[in-house]
Image 1 (cartoon, rainbow, N blue to C red):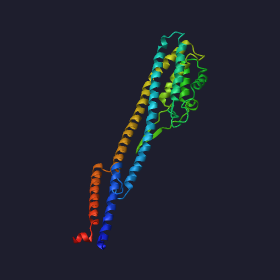
Image 2 (cartoon, one colour):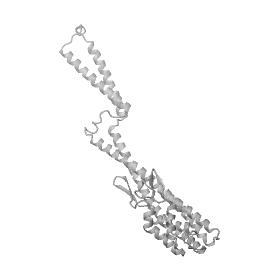
Image 3 (tube, helix red, strand yellow):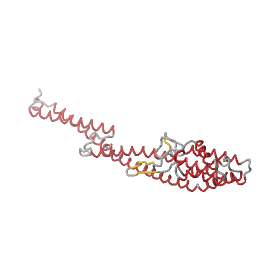
Image 4 (cartoon, rainbow, N blue to C red):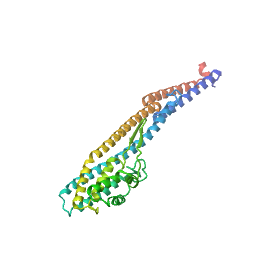
Length: 331
């Protein structure tokens, strides 16, 4: 029969505890190897979770910046594309208007019609929106930047009704665009700059809008051409003079439009730089987070094999101790 003394009972309890410990360690290492994550995250951070909390907060902050930079990049790209179209159209119209000096009396109205269509296109371009946000209305993105083209031309008709010379007509139109008329009945937005927080400590701003002087000059010159043959007090020579001067004015405005596009390009570059910086920080945070919570597969596999061997040795020892008896001992 098997004899069990107090020493045997103590040994049995010790072996049981060891068996439980090794089994728990085996389960933990198996889970770590399967998931690639440490089961005990507190150990590598010495019990303090503030580091993981800081990383999580930084990741949330970067996620917000990512959304902000994406929206700012899309908005700026749309504005740049619109300005490119506006500049190309105004250059094309200017070239046509400069030919008015050799145009026949019959072709002058066609130039005016072309200018009127260009004015409508220009106003439409300034009223472009993306994601329901107006591109050129300042921070008043919930509304169009300009009144309808036909409404503006109607206001201008009243302004030039008494003009008897080409210069008087030009002065009246320029005065309307440069004064209270345009501010109250033409431009519907505001002059506040659009600010975007694109990275920590980096704010990009743009005060470009449909009320910017370069855009207003394009609107005024195009409107002059659109009305050149429809002003009652002007004869053919004076209408021709207006068309030619509008062409010269549009050509002279090109440098200012190029300047607007260059300024917008600087904003785009800053947004791109912020995006690159944010991505680099995000990658660094992901690496740091992974180093804290990820388990090394080689070390885990080695520890797993060592634990398995220890468990097998424990089983062997336990089996041999279980086979001991007084009869066997006396033999």
